[in-house]
Length: 305
Ligand code: SF4
Image (cartoon, rainbow, N blue to C red; front, side):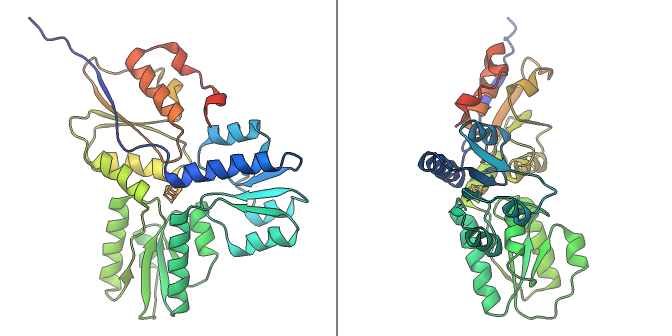
């Protein structure tokens, strides 16, 4: 008798919300509750997920997220109320500007981002030049680069080629949500050019453990990654999957993105999610894949937070 072919759908562990994101969401909820009569502004996406932004908008907090507008210009436009700075960190200059305007400042910066910032400051004080592996225009990288002109952003090998540093003291570090593979590759390239460079690889625990879980996947035809297009750690999960040779990588924001995707009857599917992806969205994707029930296709914003 022929064995019946069956699609296998499994969730990758760990995946989804990290502690930094949980903390930023808690802080934002609490701030909205504690300031019922004041306008509450979030400077940039509180975490990189548009459904979370929408859920907070429904609770009354306004997210300012015009990518053509600097954070400084955003603060210029606010005359009163509370400003929340996001998990990605904020420059001292902008934080001070908000305080000088008499705004109430709430900082939801993640402790991993702050630890990395403190390490960079300490080394700058000791005369180091910093090579910072990160993403151009990412809010975490922007906040770090604002600290000093002695911090050089390295987005790829081309940035390294154009760099000429005379200083013997060099520290290499990185944005917390980078790919383990890309970061190692760039660190190796930097060490060839500057063998004296000290290295502090600062990929945060949550990013690292989620990437390592993807690296360990076996018997997987398709990796589905649930998360926002703006989320760097989500993008890096896709890169890791590709690097590990998983033949089909699909990025989705919600279950309905899978509506027109076809799967073979015996496809082995693993589902993971970025650190800023609400569990409800990942659960809906898994529910849809397993049950093919249309009720999973509608995203209910009231279940996001
Ligand atoms: S991904 Fe890492 S650095 Fe970013 S908020 Fe989460 S724990 Fe913090």
